[in-house]
Amino acid sequence: MRVIAGKFKGRPLNAPEGTSTRPTSDKARQALFNVLEHAAWAPPLDGARVVDLFAGSGALGFEALSRGGAFCLFVDIDAGARGAIRDNIEALQLFGITRLHRRSATDLGEKPAKLSAPFNLVFLDPPYGKDLAPAALAGLIDGRWITDDALAVLEVAADEDVPALPGWTIVDERVWGAAKVVFLKRD
Image (cartoon, rainbow, N blue to C red; front, side):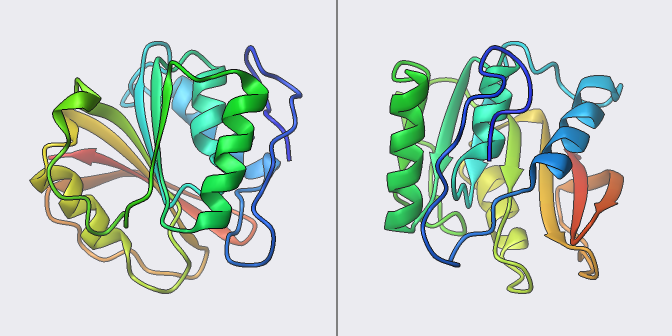
């Protein structure tokens, strides 16, 4: 796995050992970021404040930083995932513009004041088939983690139905291989 484009293009990314995480493929990540860079409804990547929930390797957050993101918060409860993210932060020398939280993405609570401004771009790549996205998306709104015009990018299994998500509107949906990517705007 590697960074696809931007200032870290071609740099390798570590992924957690084992099967507890499922990194987004390079091909799907490239397609996802092509949509983000060209859609009128997407926030600019340059200067974006990003939160990567269920982060795994952090590939989505690192890709956003490579393409001009200003800051990324990585959230994962798995120790192996956090270790891989730490290794990637160190390898890319991204100490000042990243933070790593050991917290459940479905139980975020209130956004800590030390994290400064809210986030305008959210990546969610929860385990397939566990219906974790609704609680995570509701927690982002309830805890004031995101801006009023935030965009969320949710990855689910290609055959998974996305339920109605209060506070969010689906603006686009794409299927790439085994993954369905749903783009959601705050209502």
